[in-house]
Image (tube, rainbow, N blue to C red; front, side, top):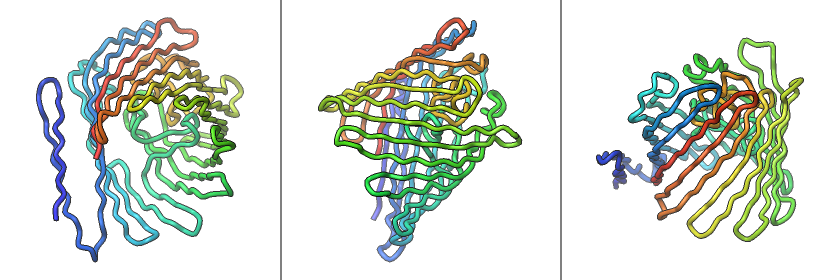
Length: 341
């Protein structure tokens, strides 16, 4: 028995086909599940923060294939192959031209009593991502090598993490990012049918450094109307100054359409500037001069998503950000299509 996936993707008037074939295993051997997604995005970037002069448009293609194999009732092996290519970009900035093909996630998921354990290279997030967020959506491909453990404590969900974040050569060369050792915990759950609440804390120590950062974050999501949700997160570190960050936003869902608007303000020492989803080096796609100022940043994020059918969706994202003490703004428009299986 064979499974065959063929994905036609339209790029600038041409059609590229990706074909993946997986043989179903005999019933007495390990079953393998295959899932994945393919994304084509067009970017238009206009960054003039701090007298930067970056005005660029290009396409980016991303493909991911996940393989999971159930070894026994309590053990599952996982791996993911990822590819990213950029088309039509002329910038000399090596960090903006970086493409890759690699196995970017792998490990084991185990069940031990009331605990679910995941060990290996994987994505990780605490809360809504202000303290730490690694994986598929950050620009510089940072990774988490370690343990993620989850369980229930009454009605609450508990998560523990311990491991090391690894940054790419690009991040280390251009942004000064270093690998860090992490320990963290999160407890979250519903306090009413309409309100969810979460509290997270973490400690990270960069490689070859005597300086470490301890931080905590409180987040909430509130279903204020049948189709309307409001979410927020506040984070704070033990740094002496510029040590707080927050986001507040809303999502409106109507049928197959989702509208999101969110504002965030992030002070420089509030979060890990390599591994937070809201650092100046990760959240905007480009933000050429945001990191140069080593300053606090703030701005708006808007997203619209339309589910065309079960496997295909369209989205548009617009970001408008600024940096304290610097002139200009970073404005970014992204339009894309995602096909998943």
